[in-house]
Image (cartoon, rainbow, N blue to C red; front, top):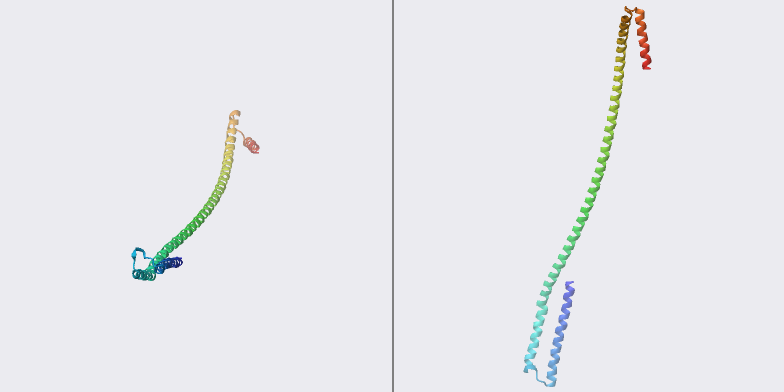
Length: 201
């Protein structure tokens, strides 16, 4: 790009100088052919020397100075273009890193959601297991309590029947004013046993 601009400038500069030189030569020839006086009373020799000097200065500038300016310009243009290219590359890398960060962030969020769901499911499973164990233990405790209550009730009923039997015998002896015979006592005990069996049924 810099070289193309430099070549265009060389052609343009050469065309301008060629035009100026051609104009000066035409004017000089007109003065010589028509016999007109040169402007500012200039001597022909001075004009020729001036043209030659101008040509030499132009050649030196075009061959030595101008290429150095063009080299400096091209180097500066390359630096600017290189800086822009580096900036564009850095911008692309930054966008790529940003996309990677967003992807990793989305992946981390998805993984956290999976872990959270797994923890909830595990917690629900543990709660259900503990509830089942607690219900089973409560059932066992209720069964034991019911069994103990039934055993204690049977024991209390048995001891109560014995006490009621002896009290009944004693009461009957007091009412009758004498002791009952063994047959009568066993009759009272049998009656109380039947009465207790009937109340249990």
